[in-house]
Image (tube, rainbow, N blue to C red; front, side):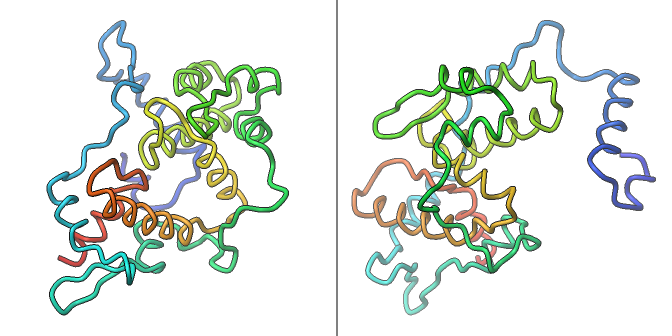
Length: 225
């Protein structure tokens, strides 16, 4: 990025104008006819051996890692730093509201699409409602509203990469979390709680897929060791 952008903070519009200008001048690195197949590659690679070893030290009785005589556990402040959301109001912790909007309504708000469009694309995966990534991808490519296009892309990253549940689908729980971020509500406590819950289940079963963002847990672990 040019020096003028390194010397001061720019809003999203200025960065977008700069990036579009640079792409027009220099082109991009994609070959002609390239089509992304992201839904086939939505499992993020983590250090599986390290994660399995780490899970063996998880003490389900005390919800902490026990290394010899040392007890260690991620805390809200550490996850706040890892998630880079210190500006979100810490006194407005995420919680599921009693009269929360339905999955349909949340998707309509995030995508800016009609009720008919959203309803036709909601699927049921086991006990959870979700929306296929391929539908969100088509929307990202075709949406006329730039802000909504970016919101849908961010939602896809949350659902496919950060908190994957059903491969190739964005789960309802992710839309609920994503919807609250726009209201400056911190997601850190619930993410931490879900991490503990998944660790307990993982340790009890002795195997399985950790679905509550192993990347954050491993980043926390590396920060201490």
